[in-house]
Length: 229
Image (cartoon, rainbow, N blue to C red; front, side, top):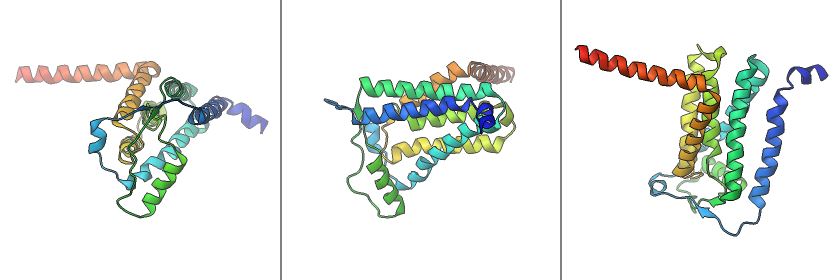
């Protein structure tokens, strides 16, 4: 056991942070608040409720835990592990700060469900266990994008196209689920995505430069070919 702890001691960083995060999160959930700021846009009213998206919504948990476990126990590149967890810790800490200084709430959840099935039962359970307060920015969105960035930036997975495509599809479905289950507003999603972009620029600067460089080169090549034609 001692040898195991020494070998994977870097994993205690995210484990310790997760415990602290959960304690602060539950404190904020129960903290007396004089008033909440309602998060809402006109676009939220246009998005229908769909209970089937509870599946990708819940898949977020094994997706996140499984990826972190991969970078702890399987991937040998510790730099990539610290890139991932520092990115996640940054976003989750900002979320806690926003929740404290700007308490927010959603009024999007349906009072009645259009159908009665196992999926709506799961959504009812979700609503009972997860309040509609402190939703900005969406951690579901931010962490999904952070996880996807780590997988697509991982050197050991650079040729594993199936993993990358599966990650992208699951990330998109998770983001959609936050709105289709009425768990988050469009604002929460946009803020979560913006925070993820910020994290990408900070913790993956080389990848960000390569991506932007390829984009500029592709654009130049296209215009150059068009000019020749």
